Amino acid sequence: MTEPATSRIDDACATANRRVHVITYGCQMNVYDSRRIVQVLGAEGWVETADPAMADLILVNSCSVRDRPEKKILGTLSRLLPLKEAHPGLRFGVCGCVAQQHGDALLDKVPYIDLVFGPDRIADLPAILASTGKGLRQSRTTLDAPADYTFLDVDPSVETGATSFLTIMKGCDRFCAYCIVPYVRGRQVSKPADRVLAEVTSLVAVGVREVTLLGQNVNAYGKDRPGETDFPSLLSRIAGVPGLRRVRFVTSHPADADDRLLDLFGTLPALAEFLHLPVQSGSDSVLARMRRGYTAAQYLERLARVRRAAPDIALSTDFIVGFPGETDEEFEATLRLVEEARFDSMFSFKYSSRPGTLAAQTRDDVPEARKAERLARLQTLQDGISRERLARFLGREEEVLIEGPSRDTRQGGRGKAILEMQGRTRTNLTVNIATDVPIGEARGRLARVRIDEILVHSLRGTVLAWEAA
Image (cartoon, rainbow, N blue to C red; front, side, top):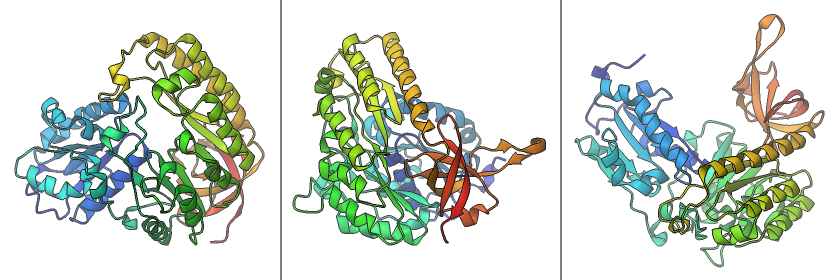
C-alpha cells in the first residue's frame, strides 16, 4: 500500500524514520557501493526499505561499462514516477558510474531527478540531501586525486548474509581502448593491507563466512604502493583469518595474473576454485586494438597454469563481439579460443561505444545485425560447453555454503510446494537443497551435498552431512 503523503517530512534535516530504497544494476562493485550508501545514510537516521512505495528517497546505482544499464535507469525511474507524483516529498537520485559519466546532463535530460552523484561522493550524500531538501537539484561528480582518496569505513552491521563483497582498491590504470572505468572510477588506489585484514575480520565477526574481494583490476592490487603488500601476499594473509571459510576475487586482468597468483589456487585451502578472467576476444589483432596487453596464446597459457594448480577449477570470462574493425576471420578466432578454453560460464556482449574512450574515436563499423549474429553463435557454442561442464557434477559430493532460502519452489506430492534453501559450491555454482533444517540455523553453515539433478544453470542436491555449528 502507498504511504500517505501526510506522513512524509520535507525537511531533509529531520531524518527520523526516513526510508531509502536503493536499486542496483551492474557489477559487484555497485552492490558494494550500495551497501556503503545504506551505511552512510544509516548514520544519519535513515532506514533501508525494500518497498519503493514506502521510500522517501529512491536511488538507482548503475554502471556505464555498457549502454544497457544506462537505459535501465530511465526505464526504472519512469516506472516509479507515479510514486513521486503522488508524494512530492519523494526524491529520485542516480549514482554510480552512469552518474559520474553524465553528471549535470542527467538533470537536464530528466526533470524529475533530484540528485546525481558519483562513486567518490558517497560520503557527501547527507550534505547533498540537505541541499535538495531546500528545493535545489544537485550534481556532484568530482573524482578525488589518488593521493586524496579516502576509502569509506566498512560497517559490518549493514551486511545481512553469510557472504559479503569487500572493495580492496578502486580505479584502474590499464586504459583498455573500449573501457570507461578509468574515466568514471579514476586511477588505481589500493586500500592498505592492514585495513583490509581488519575489515575481513570484522565481517567474520558478524557471521560472514565467504568474502569476495573487489577491484576493477583486482590482481593489480598494491602496484600503486611499491614496496608494500602485493595481491598474492594479501590473499595469503586473508586466507588465514580465523572463521573465514572461503575467499574469492573479481575482476582480474590476464596481464596481471602472474604465476604466483595462479599457483595459490592449489595451495590456499580457503581460496575457492573459481576464477573470472576476462579475455574479450580470441583474435590477437583485435586484442592489440583493444590494448589488452596479451595474445590469445598467452591467455590460454594462463588457463593451463591455473588448471595445473587446481584441475577442477571453474573458469568464467567476458567477450565483446563486433569491436570496431572485427572481421569474420577475427571472430572465428574467438570461437576457436572458446572451443579450446572450455569455460564453465561466460558473459558476452555486443560492442557499444563509450564516450571518451580511445575506441570511441574509431568508427563503429560492424553492422548491428552482424554483431547480433556473432553474439548468438558465440552464446550457442558456450551454452553447449557449459552443459557439458555442468554434467560432471551429477552424483558428486560437493561442499556447499548455505546462503539463504531458494528463489524457487518445486512441486512435491499432491501439488504441495517444497521449500528449498540455496547455497554455492566452491566452484561458484548455485545448489538448491530441500531440507527440514530451519533456514536460520542453516545460513552460513557448510554442508556436504550429493548432487542429484543438473538444471539449466544450477544444481539440485541432498544434504548428506552438516558441518558442526
